[in-house]
Structure formats: C-alpha cells, structure tokens
Image (cartoon, rainbow, N blue to C red):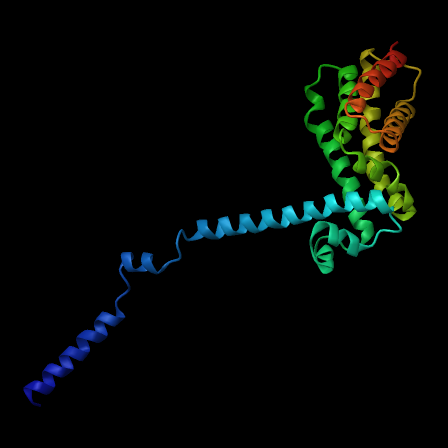
Length: 241
C-alpha cells in the first residue's frame, strides 16, 4: 500500500471518530430553543390568558344581549356579533344558549359561596356574618343593571335551566344562610322560635326583590349599598331574641 493511500485512510478514520463523539455542552446549549421549558411555560400561560379573556368577552356580551332581547328571543349569532367573534367560536366555550345563560348565574353564585367560605369565618359573630352576606350579594350587582336583570328576570324564563342547574346552587346558598341563623341561635344572638331555613328563604326573597326593582327601575348608583344597610338592620332586629 502506498504512503499516500495510508495517509488517506488515516484521515478518514480520524473524521469518523470525531463524528461519533457527543456534542460539547456549549454546542448542545446553542441548539436548544431559547429559555427552554420556561419559554414553553410562558407560551402556555399566554394561551390560557387569551382563552380566559375571550370567554369573559363572550359572557359580557351575553349579558347585554340577554337583557335587551330576553332569553328566548336571543340568538347565539347576536351574542357572537356583540362579542366580536365568529358564531362558531361561542360553541368552543359553551355548548348551548342555556349553558351560556347558566354560566352568568354560576359565576355570581360561585363568588358568593367563595366569600362565605373564605371571608365569613373572619367575622366575629352570626349577626356580623349575616350583614356581610347582604352587603356582598347586593354589592356584586352595584352598577351592573343588565346583569341584575339577567339574574332576577331572564334566568327564570328557562324552567329547565332553573330546575336542572340553578336549583342546586340556590339550595347551597340557602343552606349557607340557614347555617348562620342556626349558629346565631346556638349562641343566643338570634331568637329560637324561627326556622333557620325559613329565615334563609325570607332573606333571599328580600334580596331578590330589592335587586329586581332596582334593575327594572332607575338603577340609581349607590342605591343597592344603601338598601343593604337598611335591610340588614330590619332583619337583625327581627331575629334578635
């Protein structure tokens, strides 16, 4: 074998060994996407925020359309147009018009129940907790005339929605109020001759009636806040032993 042939074979073998070596850390790092997993995490977070923003936009548009047209006359295409999305986009978030309406109700009730779970235990006694519930329920709707009308009037236009979906949430809310009444009776803060569940239904009825007349009337700014204080005073005097 000639010397030139031997040199050529050696050079080829040397290149093969270099190709078989793993890449250096620096080279591997340069080949990875910028920021690696952190970039992916940020992209996922951004996507979730966009999804949440679009869903909220649809719900806000639905409030206005339901309040203007009523449940039965409202078309999904009207909600889509008000939200600035395609008709089919609505169905990516809500299966039907009924689910869209229920989501508006569920959102407010969920906030009330979360408040009861997280904030009421911080109150010193049952009367303070009952006053806080009244303030919270009416306060959630202050300045939200269309939403108040949807929850107090439009929601009742769907019997199926009320029976199958709203009733369990109503019952959970009433049970929470009844527990406060029972706790107040146990400590002597409230009179003993009143059924806790009857009192809870009376309290909800008063709150619902105040919201309804406010929404269908002038919806004066600050009126619900003033009504909350007056209603709490009346109820607490009536429950006093």
